[in-house]
Length: 81
Image (cartoon, rainbow, N blue to C red):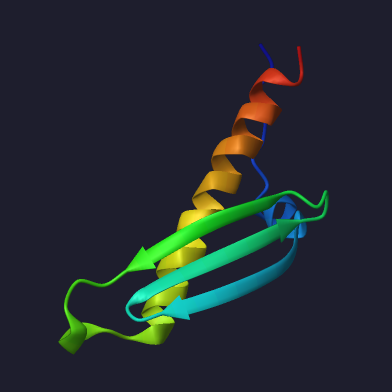
C-alpha cells in the first residue's frame, strides 16, 4: 500500500463557509464544505463563571473539523484502491 501524505491546506480548502450559533453556554459550529455537505460541531461550558464565547466557538469548530479530518482520512486511505 502506498503512503499517503495528509495535507492540512487541502482540508482547509474543503471548507466554504462557517456559521456559529450561540445559545446560553452552548455553541454550535456549522461547517459547509465545497460539496454542500455540512458538519456540525458543538462546544459546551458547564461553569457559567468560566464561560467565554470565543472559547466556545473554538471548541465547536475543532469538533466539526475533527469530523472532517476523520472523513477525509478515511476517503484518502480507502479511496485509492
